[in-house]
Amino acid sequence: KHLVQASQGKNNIRVRANSCNSGASASRNRAIHESGAEFILFLDDDVIPCDELLGSYDKALSRRLKVEKEDEVLGLIGMVRFPRSPSMPLLHASVLMSYLTFVFEIASNPLYETPAWGVTANILVKRRSTILFDTEYAKTGGGEDVDFCLRLGSIYPKGKFRTTSSSWALHPFWKGGFLGLSHHFFNWAIGYSALFARFPEHCFRSWPNASEVIALVLCYMSLSLTPAWTCAIGGDRGEVVATGMKLIGAISCILIGDVLVDVTDINAFEHRKHLLGPGERSVFFLMGAHAVANLFVVVLEFGRLWGHTKRGRIGSIGLRFDWHVGRLVRHRQNFRRLELRKFAVFVVIL
Image 1 (cartoon, rainbow, N blue to C red):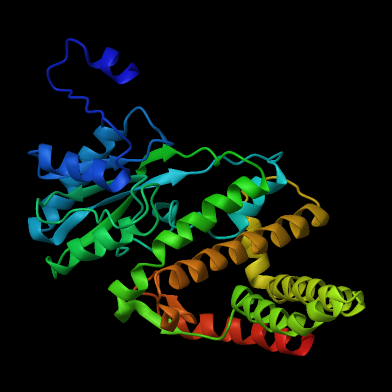
Image 2: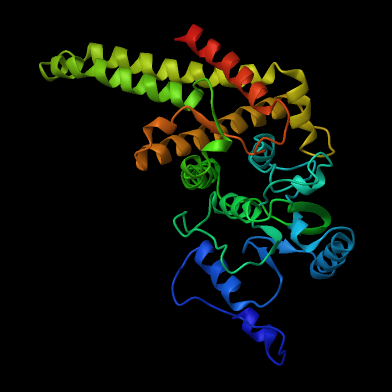
């Protein structure tokens, strides 16, 4: 309603509203079909764009087209900033320390001037009517932006995305407490788990992570409890209680071990602390935020695990998606090394 009122009397603005909740992908596809422009800008509904966003994109695109051919410019990936302050809540600090917002703020990192893809929260892409967002992904999003960008890049072999930090939008933190944020990350991972079957060239196998080990423990304990429940029906519940306590202890120790491996990596810990921005924070705050950040990642991994199971792709369990699509040297090797250290700790604990 606000957009309709703001566009009255302006013949260069068209407002479209779906008659029902068609989802993010279907809405973007409608924009691609109706637009006649060479490039199209996508923004998520939960970002606040800066006042000069369009002008900034126009200048950045003009600069690129002066030095590169049209088929070499896939688009521009803008900056999506998350708010920071010395007094930010622990949950918000945990989201930043989890690296789950890394791709949103990738335009601020000089190491990623030409990423293979960008999130649709703030991205300007070359419009091609035959390249649409896949509506098989979740309506709320999760993986469809990666899929779209990689397919667009496949038809322009020399094409590249460029980052532009001057074209920015503010992204408030998602609403909700720990459970609300966990639900968001879990559903997002279910969506992006579809990428594994569609882009197997960007997948690699690694050591079992915390969620996969916990799932194995749950399966094993469930089988162990079957005879115990039979005994419990007859009145002896001691074995059920003992097995349950073992299960709780095992899962708790696995989660603690997952955190300890990351915390003891001083360089990684300092980098995570740097992501919070300026401000003095106690070591207890940082350790707590780090622990919750790891929990968010485990929840995300469970979402991916459930996505594979839900789609009947059991063979994808144990695979990891290379978000850098081979462009970051030694990424896969370093990731495997980290997961091997964690798996060794899990084995010792169990």
